[in-house]
Amino acid sequence: MAPVTPESLGADAYASDEVFAAPGASGDGFGNPNLAVNGVRGAGDTQGSTDVYSMAYPPQTNTELTLGWSGAWVTNGPGVDFVVFENGFQQSGTERFFMDLVIVEVSQDAERWVAFPHDYLAEDETRYEALPQLWEGFAGRTPTRLNVDSNDVDPFDAGASGGDGFDLDTLPEDDVVARLIKREGFRYVRLVAAPARENPDTEAPFVRSAISNGPDIDGVIGRYLVLRD
Image (cartoon, rainbow, N blue to C red; front, top):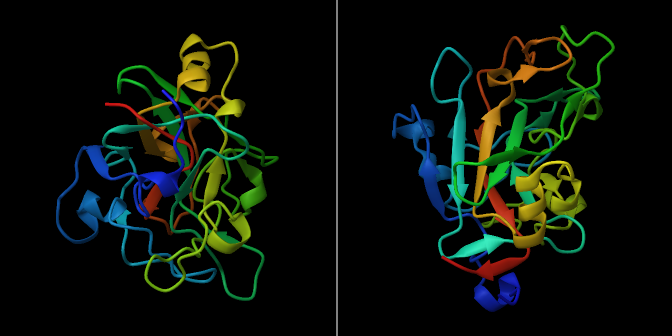
């Protein structure tokens, strides 16, 4: 399996293009998971896009979304291997962000999953702080500037496109599945609302903003693709 560049597959071939699982999705409006695979349409630094799939928090069931690439896997190459575009934005006139944090997991078979290392670094992890630098390894920390209609920039130019990049080399080396994914790539990416997972430092769900209602997924774009069913 020789890696192929996104350009050799076609202009849009490297964006995730299939919804593998969206438990609890209503299918209507922002509850339509296809909005996460129809092209990234970010609204910039200070507002969120309206072309997104909205997840929720427990006890609701639509707390995660699994996307894939039909006929291709994302593989490990130099630097960032894929970018998650969520809907965070900077609150006007402040250094604070409105964020719905997301834990990112990858899999070859949609059964054995590996999460990217993530850690909430606040001094008091039982209190939510709206500072992106405290949410290390999560998606949802960076505004989405990429817009396929009006700002179709390189998705891997972080300054131009926004989004949160992930490098397979950062997966844990002591996990056999992670080592396989580093070597062979992955087929599926699962995006999980952070409060649906336990913070190992507090043994309670990750905290969230009192005014947030769940992550809004605009899309995921892979960088180094291999044609593989």
